[in-house]
Amino acid sequence: MYYMYRAVNISEETYKQLQRLAMQLNKPKAQVVEVLVKEYGEGRKEQEKEKLEKFNKEMEAKMKALKLSKKIPFDPDTMDEDFAALADTDWTP
Amino acid sequence: MLHWLIRTGRPKSLMYLIDTNIHTAYLLQEDFEKDDLTKKYLALYKEITLAERVVPDFILGEFETFIMHVAPSRFQLNPEDKQKLKQLALDYIRKLTDECTIIVPEVKTVQRARDIFFENVHTHYMSFVDCLLLAAAQHSGYSLMTKDKKLNDRAKEIDVVCYEP
Image (cartoon, rainbow over all chains, first blue to last red; front, side):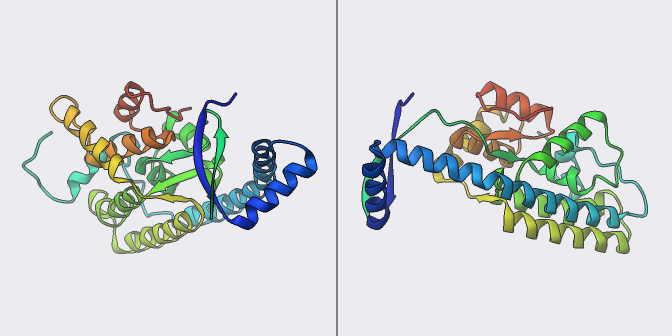
């Protein structure tokens, strides 16, 4: 379902190629764009998955190597309060 | 350049705006006692592809301040630990800025953040960074990922989608 229009700038050459494709396929240009974008997205999925695996592997090795000499009392729920360690302030929210 | 029209459907949020507490919990995961919910958040975070992780400039700034300045003082780290943490943070910041989606807020987003800030300043105080995060998520239709319960509650009040376990 389509309900919104948005302006997009593309080069003249890309537009000509799109027009050619639409003519050859006998489909509206919008439909050609939708299929191309969808296929491009699908193609990137595998690539993104590989990048994520590499990232996770590298970071996990680095984090394991960090090993501070003691456990720290970090709590992600109250992180904002930890900023008080920077300096005293008379501003109490 | 040609100007033409493309029809698009309702924006579906496939991008995740990541709060500082998630980045920090991720980086320090070997060094603090994690509750079950934190473990679930971290498991979700690890599944988000790098391109889908949205990193605003102000979150990078807050993260850097926390790791480099707050954590060493707050957790009384010795010089060796401080150095190790610094190196790890530098590697992580490099990777985030190289591989994730970096954004900067538009003027309208900052103005919206200001409105959220002043609407809440006397009732349930939020930092301006948190307000920017809400405004950015609302403006661009990103899902917000934060471990901060109060921030998740405010997000839901203004129809921002929260990515929670």
